[in-house]
Length: 176
Image (cartoon, rainbow, N blue to C red):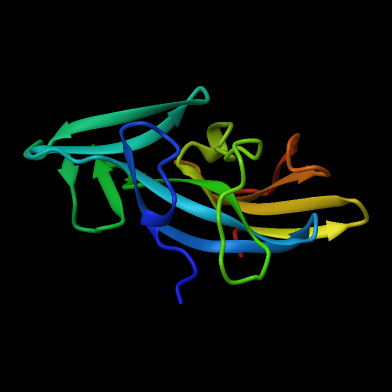
């Protein structure tokens, strides 16, 4: 324990570093045990600058603010409040790892790419996925995080290569 550490996988985005691996969805597929990890990444920090990621129009943007900017409030270590708006210090996405024995996990070849946020309700990231197989389809429910709040979205797949995004199934402020 733990099964994986941030240093065990590489960052999905150049210029970002993995801050932590969290709350995987667990399932069986193709004779193996799989984890769909929440990977939280952040920009590499520079002295005197506070930087954090945000998704805009399906493109990752790194916001940079002078550390002494009067509009910056850093009283909560998980949140950056800038000019009255909250942002997260990391951007989370989902990544697949697999195991033959359920203990030793590795990333499969690049054929299974990461899942990133894809709309305004996922602009601060997607987190904490749960996986439920029904028939030959896997349903993924996950936390969608944005300036609108925290909601639940759903994706489905049959092969882990192509995905159907169903969108929000519980609107913000309805995570639980």
